[in-house]
Image (cartoon, rainbow, N blue to C red; front, side, top):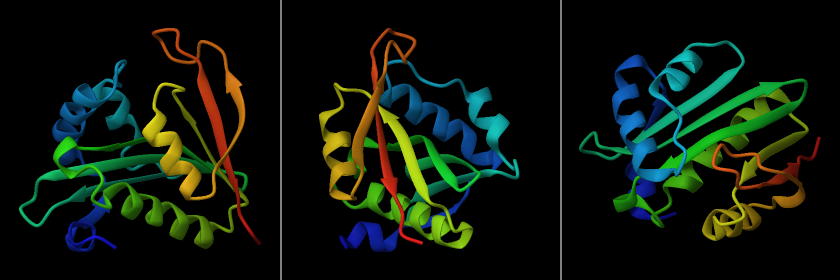
Length: 153
C-alpha cells in the first residue's frame, strides 16, 4: 500500500466534517449532493460513512454507504485531487469490505457514470462487474452503470 494511504486517519463522519465534504463534492461531481444530504446521513443507524484525513488533517476523501438485507450500497466516494492515485480510495474501500464481513453481507453495489472511466477501472480491479444500467439516472441526464460485487459467505 502506498505511504500516504498508510498514514491516513479514517473515522466516522461527524458534523464538523460536513463543510469540507461539501466543498470536495462541489469540486468533484458535475451534479453534486447538497451539504444537507450528507448531514442527513450522519449518525443514522444503517449508514456507514467515513472520512480520510492526511497527517495534517486535510480531507483526502470520503465514503457514504447504506446497508440493509445483506447488501451494501455505496452512495458516494470521492478523493480530493491532490490525493488521487495514492491509495486513498483503496483504503476507503477496505473499510467497506471490513464492514461487509462484520455484517455478513452478500453483495456490494454502486452506480457510476459511463464517462467516469477511471472509477469503472478501479472498481473492476476490486472485482466489481457491470451488471446493468439505469437510464437518465443522474440529474443531468447521464445514464448510470450498475456495478456489483458478490461476496463469499
